[in-house]
Structures are given as structure tokens and as C-alpha cells.
Amino acid sequence: MSKLIELTNTPSDNFFAETLIKDLGARFGRGGTTADGVAVVEAHIAAAFGIHHRFNDGSGLSYDDRTSPSQVVRLLRAMAGNPFFTNSLAIAGRTGTLALEMHGTYAQGRCRGKTGTLHSVSNVVGYCHARDGDTLAYALLMNGVIPDAAHPIQDRMQVAIARFNG
Image (cartoon, rainbow, N blue to C red; front, side):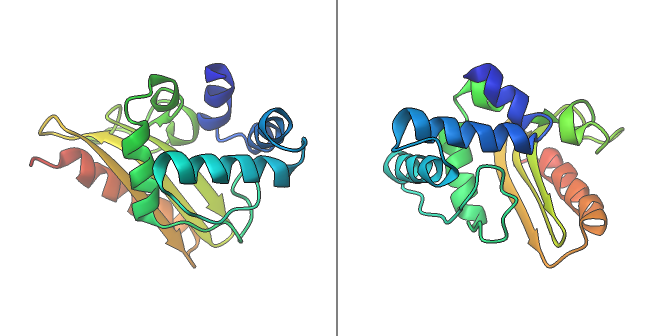
């Protein structure tokens, strides 16, 4: 399972994400459909983390998927101790969807995250090892934006998080 999560999260592979949600539905739900997998994940996230969000696919490619930054940060905080999850996230300036982001900045190698992009949506969530030694969870969710214009703003915000000094 840890390898599947890594193969899904680091490059942000939507096909793997969709297949994984169907597999979860087949194994723990009523069948191998997206809807069955979504029901399994929603029930687990609500029970385990107290998070109630709305989504209808595994990849996040639907405009009907909805959550708040505070819910994402709550989930990230709960998952911070899970190395299989945290190690699956792209590393700023080094791997996956963040490989070309934040080169030569304080965030390079200090921030790990998961990106999400649609035509008018740009998101990046994850963790930064801050200057003061703490690991900070963050969720930068931007709607109604041009993603190519949003990415540099998100990069600057992640650098600021990494530079945080208590």
C-alpha cells in the first residue's frame, strides 16, 4: 500500500488515484466503483479524523470536490506521524510535481507537498520544516485563478512558511 501511495502522490498520478479509490470500494465497500470507494473514504475520514468534506472521485479532478484549508490541515496534522504518507509527498525543488518549484530558495528540500490543479483551481498542501525547527502543516487552496499565475504565489508562501522562526 505504501508503494501505491508513493506512486500516486509524488507525481500526482490521477489514474492511480482513480484506480485506488475503486480498489478501496471493492475491498471495503459494496463494489469496485468510484462511488463505492468514495463512500468508504468519506466514512473513514469522518470516523477517524472528524472531517466532513464533499468529493466524488479519487483524483480531485471534479469541481464538485470541496473541503476547507482547516480540514486539510487537520488531516495533515493527524497524518504527520505516518512516514508512508509523508514520504509519498513531492519534495520542493527535488521530486514529483514540486521538482521544478522553489529551486534555490529556503523551501527547497524543506517542504513536501501534494499539488492539485484544474482549469481555474490551484492547490498545494503539505509540510515545511521551518527555520525554528518545527514542522508546519499548510493548505493553500486557490479558486478562480489561473494556475500558472497562482504557482509563483504559492511558491512564495511556502518559502515564507519554511522561513518561519517562531
